Length: 209
Image (cartoon, rainbow, N blue to C red; front, side):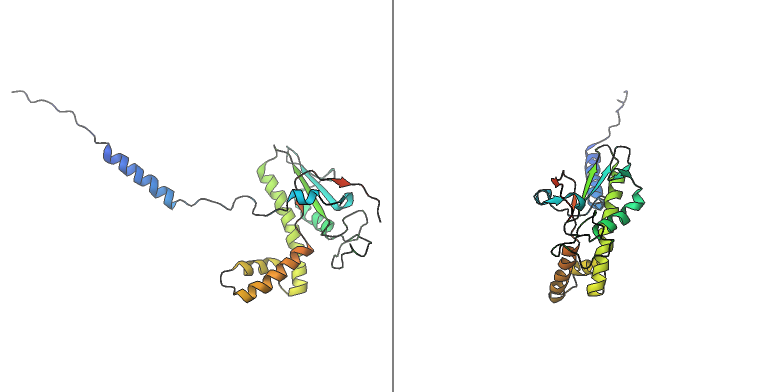
């Protein structure tokens, strides 16, 4: 009697279960990088556009599709941007008493910004510019604000602004300390508000006072 030859079979049901379990494992254990990009709350463009803006209070920065940086139609290296922004924000060029910045240490150029509250940085980036270069430009602007805020925080409170912010958000900081830190942080932010706009501004041409 001839024995019937049986074809070996592979049961795929258990393999599907294993693949599903592996998928769940990788989804649970994989760390997704979330800190890439810009972690910053920018002021509302609607708020900025409703302010009477003097031309000298606007620093125009543009990034073209070739990743070339222009500041007021002048080509600038990215490494030079921070100090240029510091000089603009810290200029304190107002002559009117209500606009004068007593804590500013700039050159008080009458053709530059009146004070940090009215100074606005207008950033225009071409859609074809690389994201990496755009982030570097934003980073240099953030460093300019940080330098000025740290300077005033050291003068008024004896510590850096960044240190005050970190302590304010720390879980171990008690409520009494948080209340004091909040007032100090808000005071420094008011002295050098983060006025960066990527929208078209309604700029008025005004004569120098």
